[in-house]
Image (cartoon, rainbow, N blue to C red; front, side):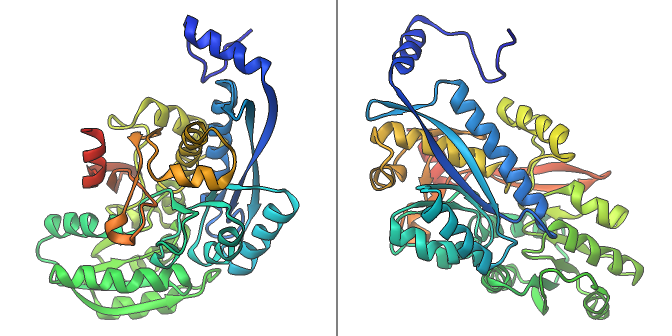
Length: 398
């Protein structure tokens, strides 16, 4: 029989644990995913669901998680939130009231997350999310945890690196989706650029689902900014705008704070994306990637046709954190798991990790992972630099 991909040779202690778990009562623990599975951001949702499935498979093949004398196997239940508040609320109602889910291992979009949070906090359900809005964090939301870097972790090192690479840039134009994510990111971006001596010439907005970007591109090109910052735009939207800007002759620095999938970006923009800087991507097949990331990335390419990125791989990391917290709490009661989650140490896809962010959010609910800057070079994501948050370095040195 072929050995499962996550299995490792077992020693005597591990065999004893395995047989002890086999004799315990076994149950299924459902973990929810609420993400866009359709539309321009579908690449994020489908990738997140796939990464969550891989994490659940690993946990299950390693014997599940034992708490309170029972062994639990993870099952992923995913829903399409269409990147809207309405669908986010509907997903929450279905997961919590119909399926009895107490742990949401991944959710995407500030607006849908806010809508879900109204119910998850009231019912004490743990909600992992990738929302870039600061409004979903803080002591008022003790059950909410962020599973990837947000602008408050990314923008300062990201923009500083770009300014060092291009010291003569003086102006920027921002293009943002007109929703909760874009509205919360834009003022932070403007202020961060201002601190680097870069003036914001314009902030243009578009509705998610837009397919005609020529008017925005024409306006931006007429301003001739040194930088165009695509803010929270998904890769396909940014790619469409880049094509229009190329036709109009604009040739400046391209910045994508939420830049994730180079494959999705270049499939639309082609060579127009060459040289773009991405703040939420990574080369999970490169030298700095862990073995776990390399294996996951290869599997995603085969299954989905494109690699993982900072958003999609976050579901794997959230599930690893949940497993560690359930074990530490010796319970699947979300209230008890929540109480230990902020202090738990776990093995993320990046390596050892934990939670921090109290200085920024007044509550330790931010997963600590590296900030990675990549650039499109010859159609591929190439890592240029990475930096750990100070809290992560402190954790690693304990």
